[in-house]
Length: 126
Image 1 (cartoon, rainbow, N blue to C red):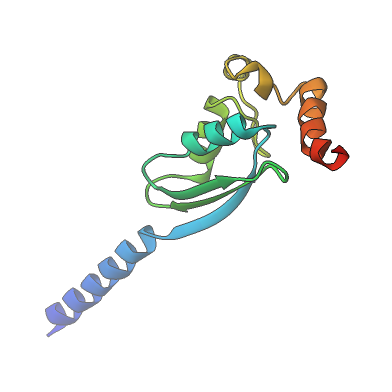
Image 2 (image 1 turned 30 degrees about the horizontal axis):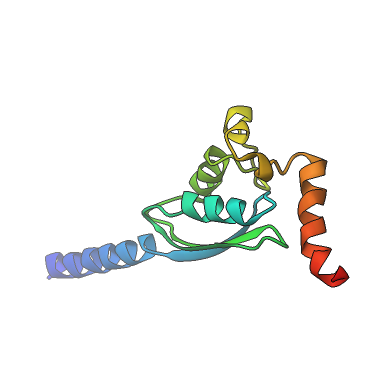
C-alpha cells in the first residue's frame, strides 16, 4: 500500500513539475532603435525557438515578448537583441554589433534620432 501511495505522489509531482516548466511569460523590454528597419531587425532577432510573439513599438521603444520559460531565458532574449546591434534596458550591444547595423539605424547618434523624429512630425507640417 505504501508503494502505491508513493507512486501516486511521485507521479503527481512529476506532472506538476512538467506543467510548471512549460510556463509562458510575457515581458516588456526597452530596446533602442529609431526606424522601421530597426523594428524588423529587432523582431527578427527574436524569431527563435521558445519565443511565441515579439512586437517592438517604434515610439515607446518597448518590445512586448511572449516566450516559454523552459525554452529560453530573459537574459538570452537580451543577448539576442544585443547580437542584432541593439541596446536594451539591461545590456548594451557590442561596438562591432552596433557598427554592423545600417547607417540609418545608428540610434546612439543624436543626429539620427532627430532625423527620425523630424520624419514623424513631418506630416503635421503638410
